[in-house]
Length: 389
Image 1: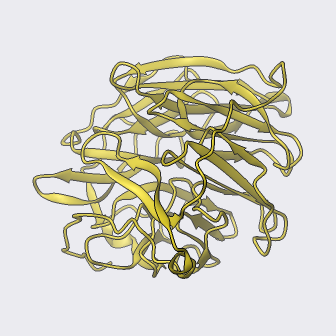
Image 2: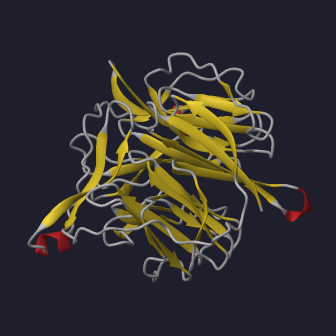
């Protein structure tokens, strides 16, 4: 893969959309801040100005459908992604080079020792097995800013040094079939108008095993969560909704599903999928849309509430969760649906921005779920919740 030498200086985080040119008045809508600690950049877009709205607390069942347990509270930590290769072994990653591991289902977490990681911001983790784990994100320090990934082959006893994927800031990473992987960036770097995804077909062990593909020619950003199915079909969204039917090597893009912008994407199969989103300015608001025909058409907002949606997870075509919140006002929690995302209820209120979820099948046809979030209380806390369904 060609190594680009450009240094990441600033994202082009405002989109150039035709319909915005027709609007007499526009305003800057902020989806989130990335990262939450320095350097801080607004992930935003100019959109037609909407009336200031006041959204009340989410409505839901008087009694939540599922019992969520707070497993862990991690002070001073900002967890962005979690992965569980088994029901007992899990990994969590975050800012300031933080990597954590549990061997008892999330009840206790031990920080992993990584060299030269204090300037890393980890946004993604995928556990291909209990021993083989990849983490992704970006480095920002005296040597500039660029996307990075690291591997462990021994369950976290040792980790590789940073390997660079180029100037774009990395986010989540996902593998299917053990060899095919995609790393989605936040957005374009410097004056480069293109957003490039990284993909591998042979395991991605080294930099040379990854290839770059233009994922978005409009210079837009992507939400943290993207979808990658076993048939190598991938979807990601943010400013634009983009699809790859070739394992990440080629992409086609169109407008975002929501008229503002999107965020997390989750597809159960090539027909049934969900896209969420949200903003923290000028309103604090979250939304979610459903498709049953592979994205040819989408529903209106089936969630329109005060928690920006950051993560989506469905166990099947009917049962799923959507998590979110706003770290700066300490609000958030999990919505729950049993009808494919057409209607939702509040499953748990966590007062934290729920940004990532994972699941693993357990005995009796049940599933264990873990969701991680964070708030700003006393200079950031991360929380990991779990439920059994």
